[in-house]
Length: 201
Image 1 (cartoon, rainbow, N blue to C red):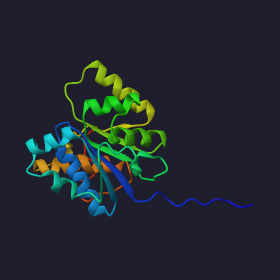
Image 2: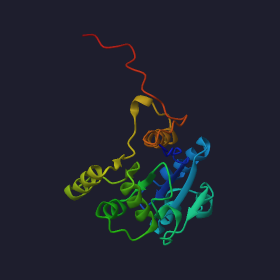
Image 3: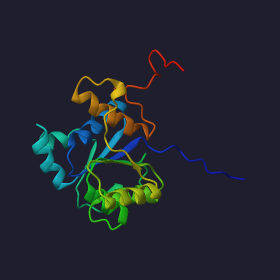
């Protein structure tokens, strides 16, 4: 009896950058993937490029140069729009409320949200680094719906046990912990090593 042997998924990850504050998270995801030898497929919204100019000194060309493959936002025929294009999954960093809501409904209008929808339907990891606060009930219900569909909601929050000494370390910790979901171990992440000194009973 013949059996089909499936090769492991190619080492490539889809990266979406949407228009929430925190575009630096997406930039650092791209840096991390390059260091880890993982092929990155990038799609960026127009709002994200506006945020880029306000929050960083990077130009759009410098941002996209960090990726291995760059897809146009309206190119719904791109490789990442099909489930037959195998990837490790997708991360949206940062993820705006609008992008989150569009993914949750399945009514996708751009390649970014189409690629996220494909990731969900193929049962691949989808990590959404949602950037919004405070959250109203509608936001929370949308996140619940996405979690029920299989998405991982991973707001970029500081881990103070890592004793960050700079904003850059705080950013890298959040990025690295998000990449953990895909089984990617990035060196800058500071791991919990247990309580120092212990606690008396």
